[in-house]
Structures are given as structure tokens and as C-alpha cells.
Length: 374
Picture 1 (spheres, rainbow, N blue to C red):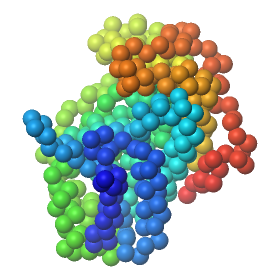
Picture 2: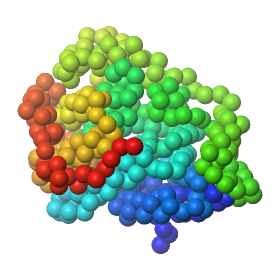
Picture 3: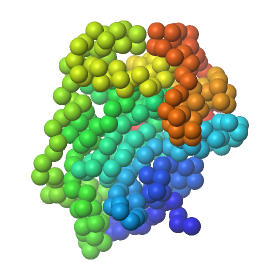
């Protein structure tokens, strides 16, 4: 079997490649552990001055082209099966995934995320901690967790809440796909480049090594600037910033829904249609999450979200979990007819939302108690 993580040090650049291309490089516990181990080792390795994180390409099959995707998120089928089986490795997955994402945020050497194709959920958790986030022409970013009865975790509360105005509430609740123009405008990416130029970038380090992190980053930025896309798509999400602010700055999810219903625009109707398939409860939880996280430091956001995700599988156990039901409908049975409880936004109570933020562990026993900010 091929390794799920490929590693190579090329002229001072540590290249980390996620290698589950048939699964769009969705993260498993094994991948999380390997990434964490390699990054810890490279942090103290004098031969490594920076890290490049990328995804592998799907193999070419008859009638289909090869496509490269950064990371589609966590392995949600595993989450579903583990929750039903009472498998405690589910807890390990979230604890270790969040610790990995935090490590990237505070890593002592520059990390560059080269983002092609799908970058969602857990992929965003990896990418958003990088010092340089490079998006390519095929990028599709999103935090679509409310669609499966979850919330935008992996520090989603942190990086969504740092978007301008109430855009973070909109991105977390609705989960729209962002192309490169929107990602750059919202501060979720730093630069754009042609995907095909990556090979030349790595070859340049192979031929002429970098001898320190500052030089490595200067060369990275010069390469990206020289290989920028000649044209970029027009804004889609960010063309609606005024409408997003008007609706998603309102106090409650019910008020947001009512405001959208009163808006006779194609955009408002499309937004309501997207929300109609999501968990009402988890949209309300997400609204609260983003607003709480706005005033929290990074490590505290990770701890809050670790508590929240424990409640996703603990407040209602097994098949009763909103998350398990969402994954069942989307991935397992594929009937796309989740039985959400409550079924309507108007029926979500404040107490149901508040329950997701109640402490599970004493502070001294929290599984992420050791995380610190820079």
C-alpha cells in the first residue's frame, strides 16, 4: 500500500503531500498522526528551512482527466461508523487533528499551503494556519459542515470570525463555495498562481537550495508573483457583501431567516434554498460559535470547538446524533433527506444551542489543555 503521506526534503524545503487522491485526500487518523510526527521532526531539523503542504492528484482513468485536490476534509464515513460503534478513536481523531492544525498556526518555520481543487473542512484547518496560502485556478474553498449536522470546526470559529463584518457568520451557516477571487478578497488566501508551475518551483529548490527560512520565503513569493494567473474570475460571494452584512449581522438565526424571506432577490432566494438542506440546530450553534470566537485567542477557540464536537456525538448518542444523521443522508444511504431535529429554524431553542458550549472536562483535564498561543 502507498503511504498516505509522502515526504521529501528538496533544497531546504520539506515537501509534505497528502496521498489519498481517490478520497480527495480526506484526512484519516493515520494521516493526522503522520503529519504531526513529520512536522515535529522537521521543526528541529537544520536541513529544513520551510514546509510546502500540498495534495496529490487523482490517477488518470478512462474517460476522465487527472485532478489534484488539496483536502476535502475529515473522513466523515469514519466519523459515522465510529460514532455508531462507540469507537473511542473518534475522540482521538478530533483531539489530534486540532492539535495538528494548531501546530501549523504556531510552527517555528514558514509553512506554505499550495491549494488546488477542493479545500474544505479539515483541509481549511490545515491551510489556514500556513504563513503563505497560495490558491490556484481550480480552487474550491468551503466550510460546509452544517450540511452534515456538524459545525465549522478546525478553528473555523477563529478564521471565519476574522473575516470582515458578518461574512464569517454567512460562510459558516450557509457554506458556499469560494473560488480564488473570493478567497483572496476575504483574506482566506494570500496569493494566486498557476497550478502547473509547482513542479518548476520544487525543481528550482532542488537545483539551488535555500539556506534559511527568510530566503526560502522570498523565493516562494517571487515564484508565485512570476506565475500568477493572467486572469481571475469575477467575484461571486464577495459581490454580495452589503446583502450579507444586512442579513447575517442580525441577532438570531430566526431573524436572519425572516430577513432573507423578506428580500425578493435571486441571491436571498438562493441562500434560503441552500440553508433549507442544513441542520437548523447546527446553523444556530454555528452562529453562536463564530460570535463567541471573535473575541477569543486561537488556542481557546480550539478548546471550545473540541468541547463542541464532543457534544455533537454525546448530547445525542449513536444514530441519534445530528452529525451521524447528516452523514447517513449524504454519504451512507445517499437519500439526501436528513431527519433533522428540530426540523425548522423557528423551533431551535436557546437551551439546545447553549448545551454545545457547556464544559465536558475540568480545565486541567481538557484534551487540548497544553495548547498555547504565540
